[in-house]
Image 1 (tube, rainbow, N blue to C red):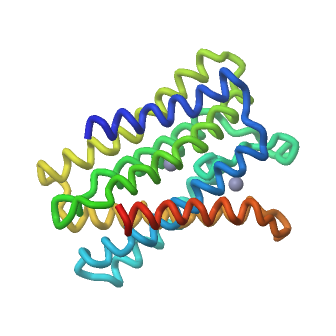
Image 2 (cartoon, protein in one colour):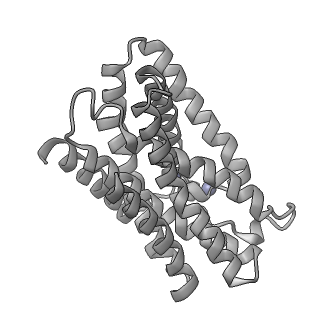
Amino acid sequence: MLLQSLLLFLAASLGGMVVLIIRRPSPASFNLLLMFSGGYLFSITFLHLLPDLFALYADSRLLGLYILIGFFLQLLLELFSKGAEHGHMYETHQEEHQRPISPLTLMIALFIHAFLDGVILSSPTSHLHHTHGNDGLLIGVLLHKVPEAFALASILSKLISRKRTVIVYLFIFAIASPLGLWVSGYGSQQQFLSGQSSLALWGIVSGSFVHIATTIFFEANPGHRLNIRKFMVSLAGAGLAFVCEFLL
Ligand SMILES: [Zn+2]
Ligand SMILES: [Zn+2]
């Protein structure tokens, strides 16, 4: 759990620092990273998370409901986070007519989301039946953290002029996922969280992953123009998830 926490913290803080120190990556290369992480996250959700949940949760219809709750909760959170979870960069020219978001609202929405990112890794399934494939899930969350931190740092640096404040916010964001991992791990160890309620929480997070990954696909091809390169990159992400689940 310590190693997982450290990796989560590093992916988020370094991902954000890249934007602050070396400036933003070019939109083209950022998009390819997004498509890759989207393809991976989407596939690991369907190959690992959902099958595990349906195998372990007693009432599968209720589980379907939790997944839907997660999906719509993510939709709601993105009203406040401007979609930083799926790597959306908050283009000012598009949103001039809107009130700018407050950094605090953005941080609260993203903190809740990143906390849940960590919860999923505490894995109630690992002590229930298996330990395989959890690394695949960790890779997925790490791959998702980097563009998420990119987006957060670039939004924050537009909203806040003091770099030091941006860095403080970034570090607060970077501890959210390790915190989620520890709280839910500790909670199920001490039995604050029953096995079934952590599975319900997992269902909610899986639903939000479905939302994030599909939104990446939708936003990558505006106007439904086919871009074969992006398509191939997202297939490569899916392929890596397949390898992690079936071959490792
Ligand atoms: Zn978006
Ligand atoms: Zn996230």
